[in-house]
Amino acid sequence: MSRKKARRVKPKITKQKEQNPKTQKRMYSLLIGICTFVGFVASVIVFLPRPNVSAPTVPFDTEDSFSVSFDVSNNGFIPLHNCTVSFGVGQVAGKNGQLDPLFIPSFESRFVMPAWTDHNLGMDDRITIVLNDLIKNVSSADIAIIVSYNPWIIPIGREKIYRFVTFKQNDGRQFWRSWPVGEMLPMPKKKQ
Image (cartoon, rainbow, N blue to C red; front, side):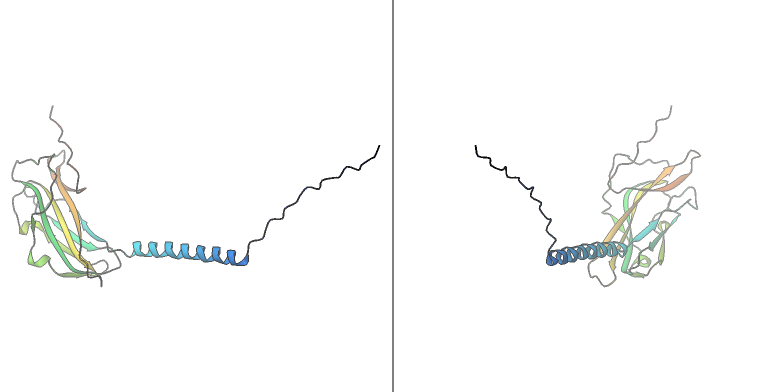
């Protein structure tokens, strides 16, 4: 009998390949590129023009909701050139009139006063407009203040629509409230 020695099988140990220096350099370049892109997007968002229209708090004349002033301001870093403020009509009701809550206005009917046109608004500059200069004796309304402007050196005109609606408080006084442009008004509560 021949005795054969059993061969012992050595386990194969595989060494992890170290990354190629070129691969490391590519990964580093890719990471730097991604970080640069994210930083660029964040800076563009910060510097976007931000016009703002603030809602009035209380009408000066309780019989006329349009006896209020709206402040249009630039809350961004970039100046707004050729800034024009216009007044868009959705619904307007006289004394004891009510608004149709199912009506969604397009605000295509617009009015502009000469004093509201061609302003240059720097950072934190503002224009005040009074709607009573156009229409008087309004008890309730669904309107828009539209701000048209050119941001700084960009020749493309932009427009932002701010919708405001009058609502009656429990004590009977009217107040202005911001409302999303494409939504219906809330249904009035039925008196019991």
